[in-house]
Length: 427
View (cartoon, rainbow, N blue to C red):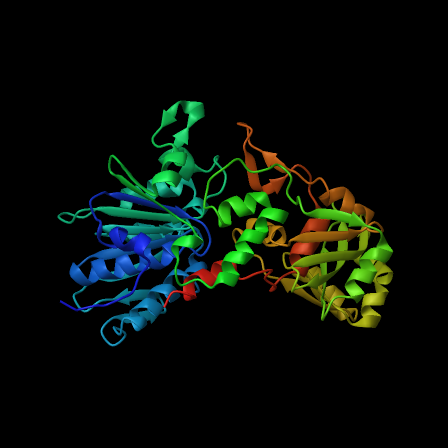
């Protein structure tokens, strides 16, 4: 048996060694160190017992920079890198006693069919996984002799998400398992075969004070995100997508950009023709203040590419880089042949939601009154709702082409690395 000494956050000490319940549901805010302690718990269990553990995220490729790298970091930090092998292609972790960790994504469901004898599953960011996927994974959790476990970890989102409806309350169907307010008060609760754990950044003693200050500031510009990130609580999301969006006069916007130290200039473009629009947006970012300025727009439809290219000639002359919809490679190639600097922005499964969350992290979005179509689409942009009246977090009541252009223009830029920081601060 390997002797391990490791400093951990006190709020997670009991969780690390509690294996009494089949289901373990961890919900909390950003930087609470819940993912870290789940990963550490997994490693300790597999060192002590020969098991096959499955780690699941909605998108397979997101494992590499999250769960896999976190597990590898902890293994090396424990001084076990010479004993536990972390293979990257395919991603797999093998223990000296025969235990192993395999990684799968729900975006490749066919790969799940080959899984056998999995006695432990970790669903990271489980709220992003569909309910049907959760039930599918329950069927994959089976072993002839070992006790079975499923660990679910997530940041809370809306109360319409399946994780809340399944593990807490589904009032529409008159099903109540646990009042989430009880969990926030008690911090850990056991109901039947489920262990519940709630955490916030205050529970992570290894976090810098500046990180917590960032979370606190969210209360001013995005109360919904503050509830999720700082308080770690479920709730009913506000229906307005960008509550921090304001309209200023064009002169005031340009003056603010001019006074910004080292503004980051970006241009994004969404393509359209018949009923959708070609939308081009010029933006400037004040990275220190977390402000997004929008000061120029182009917005037309029923325009052939050659006519649009003529009308956008100033970009050809200025050589500004345009980040455009990568779903239109032929169109991008045309503009490049015409002398434009243009490249496709990355798109992936879940990118609509990820990009929406990114824009929502700006403290202020300040738009020039000259950008009338941006103002019209975004100032009162609201979420689409499902048949039960619940919002759909990556869908809206209109098709906001200017929002898509902003998404593409911000490709590769992060407003604040809150989620990434939560993994590496605990050493």
